Each structure stands twice: as C-alpha cells, then as structure tokens.
Image (cartoon, rainbow, N blue to C red):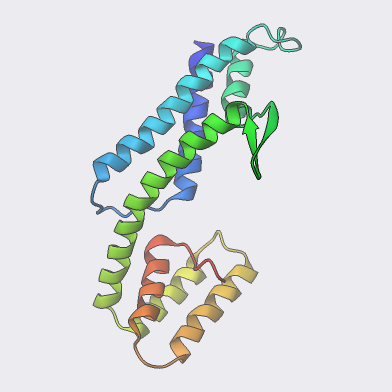
Length: 195
C-alpha cells in the first residue's frame, strides 16, 4: 500500500511536469496516440517509483520513518532519483552520463519528442485558423485583455507582453505572421520565446 502511494505521487508529479511543458489544443490529429504516450509515461513513472519504494524500505536513516511519509517522499523524490548518475564516461568528444539518468532522459526525450510533434501540428493549425478568422485589431484587443487578466504574470512580464502586442499593432498592415503570433499567444497562453 505504501509503495502504491509512492507510485501515485510520482504519477501526479509526472503529470504536472507534462502539463507545464505542453499545450495541446482540443482538436488534434493523432490525439489518441498523444494520450497513449502521455499516460504511458505517467504510469511508467508511477510503477518505477512504486518499485523504487522497495529499495528504500530498509534504507539506513529511513527505517524509523512512518511508511506513509516514506511513500510520499519516494514519490516526490522519484524524478530526482531517476536523474541520478553514478559517473560520467568520456565517449569521443562527449561526456555521457552513466546511471539511471541516461535511461530516464532517453525515455523522456523520446516521449516528449513524439508528444511535441503532435501538439505542434495542432497548435499551428489552431493559430492559423484563429488568425484567419480575426483582424489584427481584434487580436490585439483580445491579447491585451488576456495579458491584463492573467493573474499569474508579474508586472514586468505584463509590461513586456503589452509592449510586444503594441509593437505588432503599430507596424501597420494586417500581416498574417503578426496575426498568427497573436493568435498563438491567445490560444496557448505562451508568449513568443524571443521576448
């Protein structure tokens, strides 16, 4: 039961990490594949954390810790433990980590790459469709309101985003690139990376 707690906590931590990393529109090709990859990664991390709990049942210094607390600690600390490396081996010009980190990061990269491809295509289609359905003025107004209403942004980020939005508005014209950039921000909530 305590190992299951470690697994459940690790599932939540993994889910939150994926959710923070990716925005996936409601309409996406290969949505079933995306969900299968997403949940397979979450469940695999949970199962590995549950198995890892067995290693820590008799760990020195943890034998007196309440098993429920130990389960929660292993679940929360699982991603840190999965990134452990025992040594770094020189391979040609590169330093290659040796340990759990290599396998964990390889699996994570493989899953993230596939999820990103599916999500990226869907985000592109969503942004272009939204950009084509609205004028630059409409998108500017909506983007400014979104920045104003975003309770998670600090004042400096709000100022920087509003400056970017106003720069697009003041360029003149009704360029599809500008409308698409605004539409992408409106739909995903992610500002351009070069801001």
